[in-house]
Length: 303
Image (tube, rainbow, N blue to C red; front, top):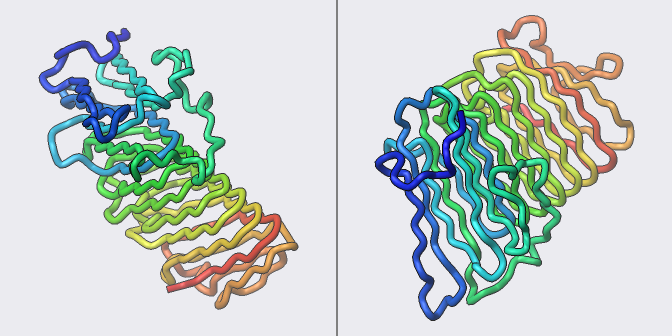
């Protein structure tokens, strides 16, 4: 069963609020949409955001989601959709070009063009567009983010993410799990274009499988956190510097698929094409990494 797109007052706080921008910032508007959890038991969320600042974090209020957007009406328009089937909900929110005739009911992550550069961000009185998004921390959620030329702060610790996919263009992204994920995560997929990408507390994500693909840029992947299971990671890097930090109590095996990179992994033992930590046979938790890089430097630090 499909519900109408954000029906007016269908729930107590399901709302869309447009406020005219002040004369000093002509063309800028504010938009907000929020919804109570009600009887929703699980959730899919797709956020597609082109340019500006983006933040995602757990909600402190009893909202299923709460989105606040500030955008330039001359360039963008907010598009959103809400669907519910039994106890499962699906929410989509995108800022699309004003020339884009794509229906809100058909907006998909695969359709989002993230071919932006940070230098392309429009300077309108030193203002940038902004999306602040909050999620209910206790409802199992599959979260997908498509991010263009944005500066993103993603604090996802304490949420209940069953899967996470982040696709970024020319962006600066800070991803953090400062607290353990409340549920096991089947898959964590991170894909970055010409980007600076930093992830902290990945051990708290409780992922089974991680996939990271980076084209060009500086990348830092920190696997600290409260580990509860074995996991695998497939890491592919184009050109740039990659720093990987892993707690000493986690046993690690790295399979290196490229001979063109400089791999600095102190404390690892070379076994054929693999690099293995001495505690591989004794540790409770194991992380296996498939590493492929075209050109650059990879540093692995144990702490």
